[in-house]
Length: 133
Length: 187
Length: 221
Image (cartoon, rainbow over all chains, first blue to last red; front, top):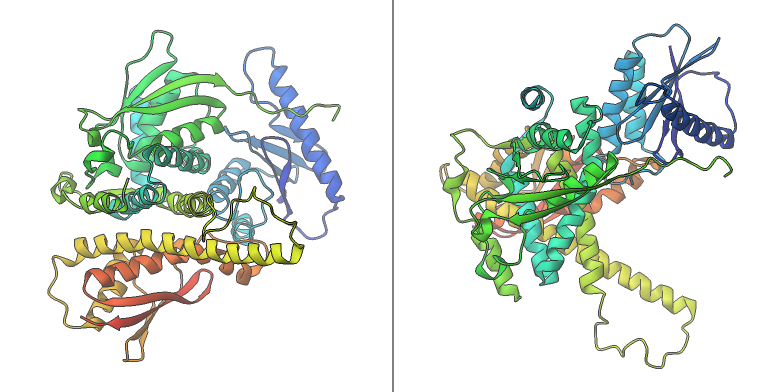
């Protein structure tokens, strides 16, 4: 089950956060921002400590109750997908999400790159896609 | 290697791209250039605005390129330019410029545009022929898109068939790799 | 450079149609190219309005560094509102002009191989069907007329609006979308003009992604 999606911009700012299930524990919006920034830093460190050459950094964070998958695009935008521990097929979900981001966010004239994403069409399409996955 | 890019570029163009009549796109670009020429009455400024506009397009276009092609990071500038030509230009304009004139240090090269859809139907009036880089938006697109993948480049037209030159050539120079922004932990 | 030669640039843009026959294949490009060009076109024209129309004081005002008393905030707002309106008007004019020229050329290309038009309705139908299919891969969904020179073309999923949205509801996004719709208005007016019909084209109503264009015929063929 896909629980939540975070989108973090190049500078480590949280530009999108959405839960896909009712009744999930919420944090304060400030905590979400801190989480995104912290993750961004840790990601940067993990991509540097690789002892055997270039690394794209942290890809998966596993906990007892959830998994956090990180997909960083070549442009530096991060998509963080929180799922239950047994969820698979994350790759195709992330691919779909990236497609929708490039269509409904980047091709929307009212969206300014790097800014928070508050676009109803993106929400609608995302929700529909997540449900059918 | 080059063949692999070409195959992928063609596959994307055939199967993963929605197309529209080129005329509408070409006419729109042409009509916009005309409007800017009227507004600014100065070709240098028009060139600059076309480049800036291209840059902004590039910033958005790169995500479409990456999402649709599934292409990852390139190893170096040489590979990048092959990808730009055989996958990038191919999947957006259905052309593959020739990458050539590499400098000895592999930091500069040229894209020769044997075809350029933007030029279709266009003939410049004499006074524009020495001043207007009609397709200058393309340089901006290259700069904007590559900057988003942490590569700072300079791109400029050095010749253009609309000016009476034999070929249309964009010179691309690699400037530097941009560091990813990492927040200061003490912040 | 003079305005006349600028117009000339466009005239000459039409010249050589033979170049286009690329091995007999219809020439196509990725739809994204146009999507992004339209987004940035409005931006670049907005900049042009700011830089070319407001850079110099107009209407014979004294230069700003001459003696000027501090203005009350009220009159400043009034003036900036007025400037805002003027800027919007100029942007409208430019975006519409860009569309108009394209319309003229589209008519030239797509109308030349078909039988002569019998009347204005015939031309409007040509826009609803042939032109719409060429540009948007679909026909206009609904065409209405009062038979006295007013036509309403309704498209329930207007292609250029499909990706536009905001966070404050459809009404607000629709308002924001206005400048992008002046462009197709210009295209429609240009097509009609090229076929000998003088018209006024406006957006009758929008409700993203639905859009209705109103054509008012000023003088028929």
